[in-house]
Each structure stands twice: as C-alpha cells, then as structure tokens.
Length: 609
Image (tube, rainbow, N blue to C red; front, side, top):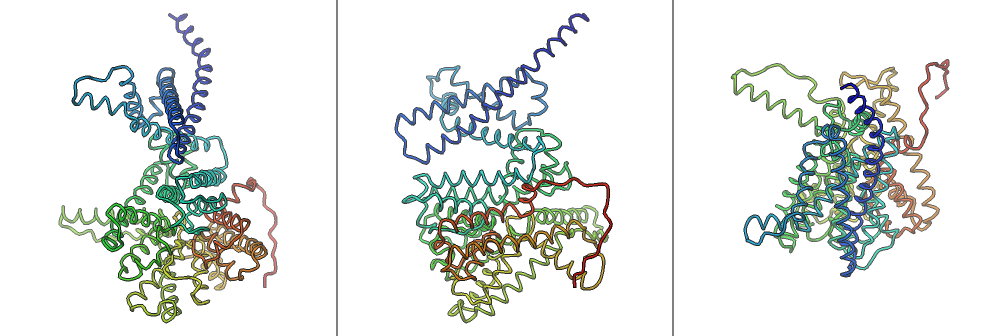
C-alpha cells in the first residue's frame, strides 16, 4: 500500500507541471478567443458584410465556442478541487448554460411540436450562443485584467492604460461606417472617444448631425464605462462572477474604490453599480415624465432620449442628442423640471460614491431606529454623533456653498443679459442649472460665448474645483480644495494642526491636496502656453477656458473646439485624459517610487516671507 501511495505521489509530481502548462496555454487561447469574438461582433455590426463574410464569422464564433468548452472541461477534469474553490455559484451557472449548447449537437431536433422543440430551438439559436459567449468573453477579460494586479504591477499604471485602451477601442468603433452619417476623421473620432470615456463633453463636431443611432449607443456606453471607471467594472465582474482573487488583488482594488475593509469590498462594488443604475433609472423616468408628448417623438424615442440624458448627466458627461445641446428651442420653454432633474443628477454624480454609501448607512440607521420604536414603543434617545463622516461633511458643505454662490453670481450678472426675456422662474432655474454644469457636466442652455466676463470667471473657478473624490466629476476635487483652504486658515491663525469638526486632518491629506493644486496650475500653464502658440487667432481667455474645461473634464466651451487644428485637438484630448485619470494617479504610474528610508536628515528652515 505504501508503494502505491508513493507511486501516486511521484506521478502527481511528474504530471502536475505539464497540467499547469496545458492550462496556461488554454488560458492564453481563451483570452485570444474572447478578443476575436468581440472583434468579430464589431465587424459584423459595424460594416455591411457579404454572405461569404457572414459564413466566415460564423466559423469564427464556432471556434470560440469550442475553445471555451475545452478550457472549462479541462479545468474541471484536471484540477477539479481548485476549480471548485475558485469558481463562484454564478460561474457554475454560466458553465451549465455553456454545456447546454451541446444538447442540439448530441440530439436531433424533435419532430413533434411543443415545449421540447421550443427549448431545442432556443438552445440552438444564434442569439443564445452569442450572448453567452459574449458574457463569458467579458468576464474572462475582466478576470485577466484584475489578475495583472497580482503580478505586483503598478496599479496607477494599469488604471491609466485601461482608460487608454477603452479610448482607442471607442475611436475604432466611432469610425465604423454604421456609426456616422457621412464618416469622421480619426482625429475627431479620437477626440469624441476621449471626451466620452473621460466624461468631458467637449465635441469637435456637431454630435447630433454626425452620429447615427449606433454611434449614440457607442457614445453612451463609453460614457457609462468612463463614469464608473474601468477598474471598478472589471473588478466587479472578476470578483462577483469569476470567483476568488488573490489577497493582493483585493487590497489594490480596495484602495481604488475606497472600501473600508476586504470584507466590504464586494459590497462596495455592488453599491457603486447599484446606486448608478438606480439613480440613472429614476432620472430617466423623471426626465420622461417632463418631456412626454412635447418633443414630437414616439414613446421609444422619448425613452431613449431620457435614458441617454440621464446617464450623460449622472456621469457628468454633458453629451446631448439635440442640436444646440440643451439650449434647443424644444426645451427652453416650459421645461424647468427637466433642467432641475438634470442638475440634481449632475450633483448626485459629482458628490462621490463614498458619500452615497454614507447616505445609505444613515438611512438604514434611522429605519432601524424607527422599526425598534414600532416593536417596543420605546424611543431610543441616544444620538449617534458620527453618522456623517468627515469626508461627507466637507464635500456636502463645500458643494452647497459653491452651488449657492454660483447660482447667485450667475443670476446677478446674467439677469438682464443672457437671461433677458425669461420669466423669474426661468431665470432662477437657468442660473441654478448653469451653476451645476461647471461641476464638470458641460451641458449648455445658453451660448457661453455671450456670457459676461464675470460669469466666465465664475465658470472657471467652478470648473477648476470640480466635484467630489471617487465620483464621476473632475477638477482638483472639492475635497482637495477644502483641505487647501483649511490649511491656509491654519497658517494664517498660526496653528500647527489643521482641525475641522473635531478632527485633525492627516499630514498625507494636506500634502496630496497641495501637490494636486500645484500640479494642476503647472499642467494648465504648459498647455495654455502651447495652444496659444498653435492657435494665435483665439483669445487667451478662450484658450484658458478650453484647457480648464478639458483638464477638469467639464465639456463647456466658448465655441472654440471645432476651430482647433489637429495638433490642438490632440493636446486637448490629452488634457481630458490626464484630468480623468488624475494628476497624482498618472504621476504615480510614471515616476518610480522611492522606498521609505529609516534615517532622517536634520531639519532646515527656508525663509518664506
């Protein structure tokens, strides 16, 4: 018996390396098959194909199906114990659905009509096969991207590269013949793709007349991916559908989404997606309730219009399907609720997901407190003093102040100018809307080129500050702005510590906030300087407005974007990319990090005043 066990042990040591190599090869083939499937579907739906090409694509899909079946079968047969531990329940369900595609291969189509024949036809249907293979492909690529984190790759670099890949894919998709009415240059396609993924809203062409329905679908998908964040989506798919990932992967993803612990990591990802879908769904219904029967659209067009603008507003993208953006005559009279709904979606998207999660905790706390009262008829008089965490308090207060000051300032300077001829209700609605849009949304209801210089300066400061951290908004973020202001107040008051709401701000928060502000000014100066040379016909205010709008991912413009040359468009696209990824994040991915040393140099004083 001992000899038998020794033989099995020796056999396992001898065979196992070959098993790992075989599974590694299958993993590579699966990644390649996933990419080929997506490319095939894009080619099929983006071009007008012949019968021969359709036949070749069908052979490609069949080959992808064989690769997926082989990969899963080998894993189950050769490493069942590891597979059982790593596969989640949803992955096993997808595996079962994949094996059901073998039913039409093994069994002939039933001759008797009925439920069995209908099931056979469904399992043999092209739609079922492609939908299942597409889902498996996305999940497989997501899992592969998250696994890169386990190789100690720089997370900041992966984040930047993932955005770049999506931008390039979007560029190719927007250049497909079915995406545009009469074609588009690669520079404009790259610009629009970057603007969509970076949820900016700057457009170098007239979006309403350039893109078809297919093009608008591609744009809104790019906006949704860019708004949520590539790593947020891929991490969710990898952890929720594909099973366990390494501890290092989870630690990196936790830092990316600002989760409190590893135990709450998956729930945080679920909350982010859940809040997004719920708010966008409610926003869609609210918008539809206001425009129903007033835009000359049928019910399907109204719902599509509402969904597009709800997603674009919550993601702070600023894209619209209407000529003239939201200043279209169909909306400018009698649609004040529409502008208020859009403004609220912009604000909710711009305050940040951690604050939405904090709101959820606060609501659940009060619900439990009230439910306890209904059960015991004894009111719990104890107060929980830290329902609103420090980050939530700072962001809400600064956001409220910026909205109030912005609304009042714009109303003051434009009351008898751009808002002339409007009713009082319309003027306040437009003032509030135009104060919300610089929070990196980029919608426009009036011609910004006709605004006063004072209003444009208000726009500039609102765009530069932006929204909250971990949100769909851009800018230096209200968090960093608040910390810099509090640090300034502490310096002026002569205190060594920066304190607010009974808390002392960490030294790292102050350093990062100051670095963000300095880097923002530095990058803006360089790009404004270069573009002013490339575009001598544009005024300095126009160039500055364009650059601030780009790096803050706002999308507002003084009608200068279409006038830019190709070189300037590429520079503005680069600014949008830098603004969306984040200056600090991008620098962390590029600059080699210095290890912390255990020694300390003697301190020295530098004369400042």
